[in-house]
Length: 528
Image 1 (cartoon, helix red, strand yellow):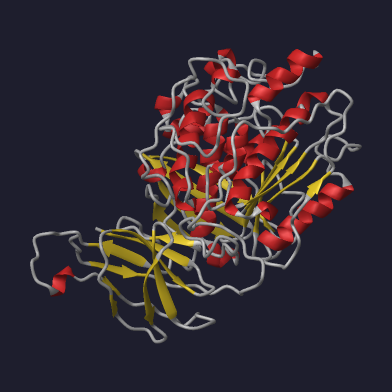
Image 2 (tube, rainbow, N blue to C red):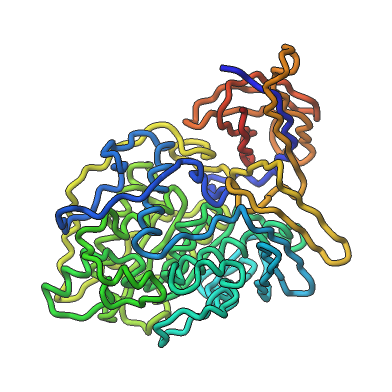
């Protein structure tokens, strides 16, 4: 296969190596080039949960790398039937400033701009993003809340979209209910993360340690935000109910069996979701919300319930959680998903056991501590609940590696991407940075690096046919200087010693690769 010439300049940034490493990627969506599409509604209603391992073609995945495109099929299903399309970031430019304790993120599209502002508080190098306020269950991290009304207003009692909401200034073509608010809010969370990455040095944060937390309607928001952005390390979904962790199918069945009114597909908000969704038979959906939860794999999530609150429908939520957990089981990392359905507390006020269990996840996945997170606490106990978690499909043992992760049991990588269009600059007077968001990495996460790819095929010289990976400064390298190159399936294809800054020449077939030093962040690059 022909190899073309390119130059890739990147910085490998060290982080301390501990037994328990977080999983986080500097790419919003690793599978944005999968060409995934949604699946048609089922011809015959099926009350059983769909197989999360089955591609739309019917083929079941067997390798962890195949989850990249499978989760993008689920994304397409969710967008088609539930929330509408989360806008592609590639047409927008993001800039950020940090002054005093205020982060300001400016998103510009077609000459029009909106600002997201966040009051930063707290300490620590990890990031806690709460929904419309601080993430109260995530302690010891910088609090950088997502103020959702700066995108689209909450307006719980309204049945109509407001075309004057800031989001529609940038995307007027989506006004009038063409997307649900969870698509817009997820977009806003991602743009806030863009800004955090751009001024991470001023914020003094590690963007491989980002946590989201929300409760109730904001629990759904955190769940969608974590599922739709792979830069999120830990998602805390608290009392999210129908439209969150709950299976639409199981919620329908629960009400039919018990007569208890809970949040279901036909009575949820028609502006949070597509109004057209409310008329759908959930048994005909090609997906369900165990797959929404599973989109977070192989990253971390902890789920909190509150069974006495009927509207939450925790029977459905628990059964959906157990089904989703099987995806982490297939990855061999069931301690990356935890749950606690303790009752006896007010809505959105975590029980003591829940606070303790969330803290364990925070300590492991946001602080790098060696903490046990195999947490399956407080199965919901309500007399009307039937907790049969049987599913109609089996759990495969997935082989290989997920792109950017170090191994099947220890996922240490934080995938950075290179972009010839991305430009990051810093102003000493305003602590500002800017980025042209690109489709493979919604934020130009290369404030100290840049790359250009030359895919010109007219050159016939042997010298020009050899890719050059150059300028690999190792001044921050805490361990050794051995850099390993992996292909998309996680197979090691090259290993070079670059213990001193130097130019390294590598001859590789065209494709997607990850460069990784032991214990370091991974860098994604493409050979054309």
